[in-house]
Length: 116
Image 1 (cartoon, rainbow, N blue to C red):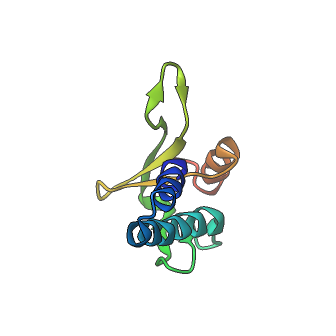
Image 2: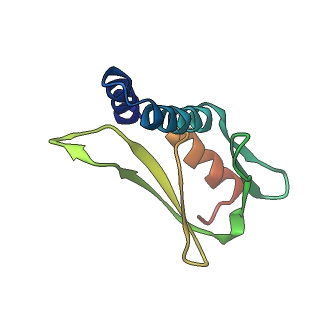
Image 3: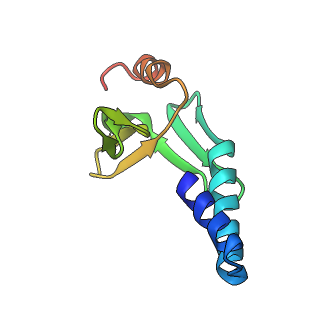
């Protein structure tokens, strides 16, 4: 997101209005998705992932979850700017989530479904 912001600023600086406008709209979508993402556990053992107004809500049945892994994005030395959880399902699909409190998210998911 920072890279897109810097590139947008550069395009404005060199007076490339069309590309700057396109990247600005893309940046607005990224920020909206980041701010409005929410994870909801329902009483009927489902996880609802809502990524904002412009995206469809994903629904995961907790009995279909096979494993949860904590992964890191690209690293520079020992440092990684992005960490996320990969939820693996029985159908072979993986869904990446970025909750603020990862350990509490995993513990609550274990509490909802003991055999993950």
